[in-house]
Length: 212
Image (cartoon, rainbow, N blue to C red; front, side, top):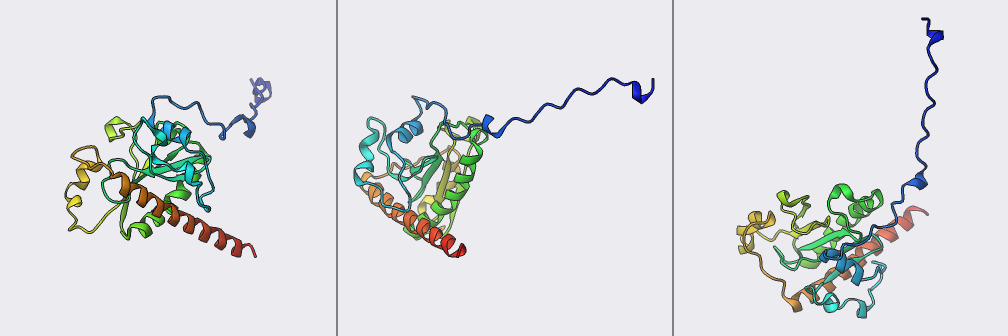
């Protein structure tokens, strides 16, 4: 049989239209997820502007533990860890329920990358600690305690600080951790939010000058 006698190839299937993939509509929140509860409690606000004071109360998440809010955008939420490994230890996560990093959308991934830098800068300025870890665990075997994707930003004080003696083990789910003091947490959260506002405003001004 000649090549001319071969049956015609089936027509190529068209690629899905971009509108097929909706990356803006979050899935339903998990009712038993503490991070979803925080996301539903605190509405988004522009990070370059002060948040409305009545929307920041740590007790709004009662009967769940208090929440010391750092950032609340349409896609992300950040707050102080209630069992911090060091002063300024915070969590950044998608607002929608995404169990692991592989579950986040492209838009959320881009926003996470953007705000990891902003929050790292803000925490360093607010605490005066110049070194830090960014940690992200996926699954119980990797020491992920809450099955809602989140990044830890953890300042690392001087090596002589007594907390460093147990840092490595507690970071991966072993050892004793201290509870966050309510008054200290509220004060620190306000200081970090202010630094976030400054960093975001500086970025916006640089971008504006770049367009001139």
